[in-house]
Image 1 (cartoon, rainbow, N blue to C red):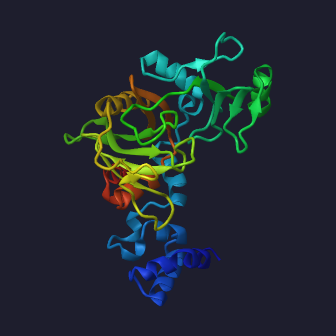
Image 2: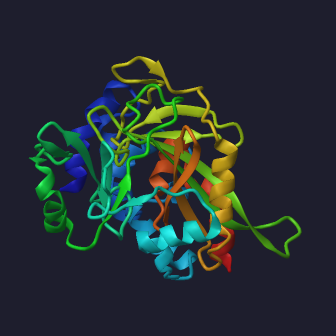
Image 3: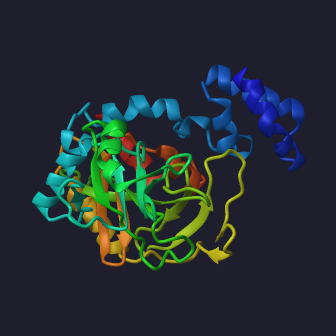
Length: 334
């Protein structure tokens, strides 16, 4: 069913481009699904119908959940999983991190702030709360407005005691293509890499991907993906996770160019991620979410579950051909 559903959804577009014939495409999708366990949606996402590389070089979503816990030695570190402990870690080592707020103690709350669960990552459970003429407005599906007296009680009903509140960070002015409150996030993938001498490992920054909220989105979760050159900060085209979607050089609606522009504070961001990873010896690979503000790079959170799709989509090649893939290969042999 999955194969037929994906075929019906995307085959017409492929055939119109003359990239394959109807029978060849259907057979290809079926064979890879049966013998290589390639989900049909992944087949179209990575345009495998026109690739020369072996499908074995691509890392698929269902494989990631098994591979990276093993590579990370099945390590469990609550500094990564608990946002309060991660904040303490940042303060201890002098890493810039968003300030926490206590709505019961703050005399004057900022015009807008965010609330999110203490555990988890990827923007799940995130909510923006903005001042409203009648009190406060929540960034839920209907834009609920509550009065100030009910604010604390409402948050407790929604989150229990499993939440933290932080002042909303604003984007650097370099991101002029999007509202400053719609936070753009830089994710830097780092790993312990064997050095050429062959007798020691050092943390290296392997890849960078910028996550940009799409029009109508408040967060960058499921937003546009952009490859970042970690040496220069130069941005590539914007990509979507949707199979067969076109890459974009300009942000939709505003016609402001994204591709070719350079991120500020790229050296600081890379250094921040590498220095942070140096405190996690058991985790071979980690990914660091960083906000680029007018004041500099701010470390948001660490991720132990990798978003490999973001690398493969933005680089338009299998992870096996990337710096991360080569580092993985070495650790898989150990």
